[in-house]
Length: 192
Ligand code: 5GP
Image (tube, rainbow, N blue to C red; front, side, top):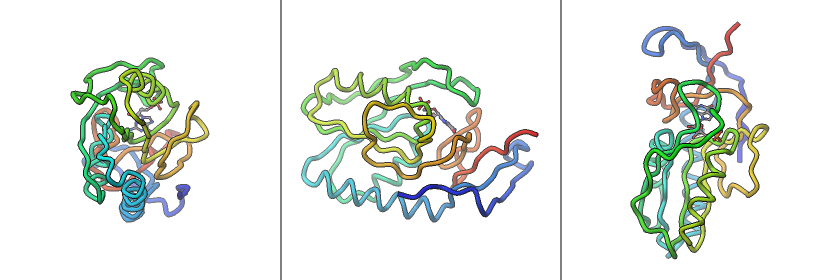
């Protein structure tokens, strides 16, 4: 597992990114290498178990697409939409269920795919909710973990990168629904 560094800073201003300055945190190549490693770990662990992989919308859709295409095992996918953030860059403190899964997960192996764990509120809520349905197992995969901030009473099975407590965008992650299409992870430059 790599810890992201804020060196090699690149600043983008203006243009399609609304004039916000961004600092490159994790390069496209580093993401792609790590996603392939995570897929290999998951494939080894779930060989012949046919898991249901549940992506948390919206932020995980790009990570999820890359991750499942690198898996070497049979699997199904489903999605759930939760919201703990409004349009601000800090958690609202409550989780709302905006779209539930369609699959019956009773007696199934479930893998939850999250883009980023910040306070841990979303993933704690989801874990409790999924376990009520009686799955055989539930494991958690996140691309990013703010491990100085996250308060979790369980272990995240697969973590792509531990990152500092900065608001990040790109590779599916947004600010006010923008910037999801960037192919690397950037931190919003702090306002002076
Ligand atoms: P938590 O419930 O762990 O505090 O936050 C989880 C959710 O908040 C993530 O799924 C994501 O939607 C959003 N979030 C948390 N930190 C960030 C961040 O740095 N950037 C973006 N774009 N979203 C974040």
